[in-house]
Length: 105
Figure 1 (cartoon, helix red, strand yellow):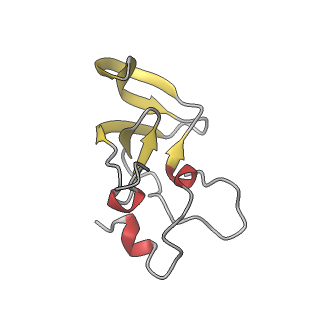
Figure 2 (cartoon, rainbow, N blue to C red):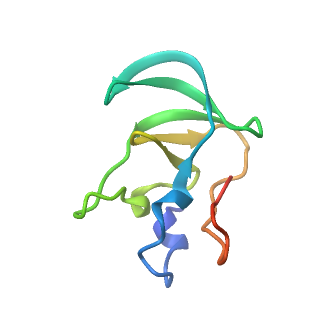
């Protein structure tokens, strides 16, 4: 599976973290833990109905920013720093296109 760093090759390495953060999600499934007093749902669903499952905690770089280059294809960050992977045969995450204010899967 390709990593985001492959897609980011030749691109400015200061790609805004927001391009890799999912928002406006609905929690589904069991609560499997907590991080920063935030429940960790086993599964989340976005506005278009795509499902994502919890795979871990987002790594950070030396400056404390989320290390988006460590994400694998299909993995996204969910605040407060959780990593979810797209389920099934949904389209994998892609690098941001120039001029777009926010990337959505």
